Picture (cartoon, rainbow, N blue to C red):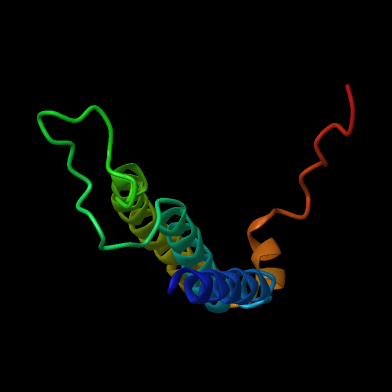
Length: 126
């Protein structure tokens, strides 16, 4: 009976993550990215059913999981997604730190200082 509450929490994470991703500050956008990744992980976790009725183990005489067992595949996917999202977040954090240190910009609008003004624009069509 906890699944509806976790679905609401996942929705709150999605909405807060999207709101923060649209923020003009780099640090807020990074926090929004982390919240969005956690919302996706929680949604994957909910897709595998949250229950402790039966362990997800197939016995010797059985050919499939028991009816009340949770699916272990989404849990394995979540472990992989946590590692990937953490490493990607660390990479984005380093990029934001370099942008702040080298360009002095902590907002997205200030990142255009890295583009040279005298360079011609790329071709617009083919």
